[in-house]
Length: 280
Image (tube, rainbow, N blue to C red; front, side, top):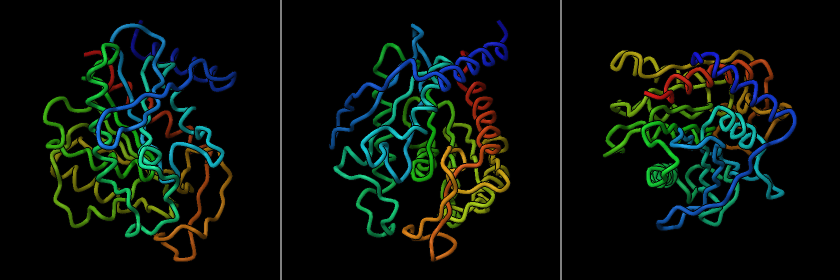
């Protein structure tokens, strides 16, 4: 069966799962270290060594205020399971006794992106010990604060042994990279951005992609979606959050989904991951 046909079959299965309910559930696991890192593991049904996705939550954390998984992460996990890929979601905040940090000014946060960067590397090392994971086909996907974390593992020098096969970031903050030297990319990078994002604007990320293109042609791709805010891939209605500091407008930011951009970004995501996670 051709790769394109396999992918279409997998996406049809994903649509069925999302319509009728998840066929798999997350299982709690612990990655050793200091502190021990709680992760949620959702394996694919297929046997043998499979690709795996490390999914990095945003500043709201892995769970809703009611203690349930954010349905954004479960919907992605089900989609990736249908494609035959395992999913692991590190709980960087809960493992350190914290919940959402969105409303905290960056200078006051005790959990830094550097902590989460180490969580990614520890999780990748944990995946490499499993006999059901192909360690050469591991991708990192992050949203918002998790996307900023994913950018921090782009540096090839962070990966002394196996490197990831792909990295994807949904609406990261890129302005901090303006004064940073470029790094040797550990993997191809796809950035999915909201053109109207007033929390983490798209322009600095496009500029970063252009810098990478000039030095490492083909390493970084940026896609920006018109009329799309922070969280455009969610199913939530657009709302204004006056509790968020650090946006373009000091009064607050807008967040919420854009169905057209969500579907377009999912197609781009599917294509990118299928390309880089295929059997070599």
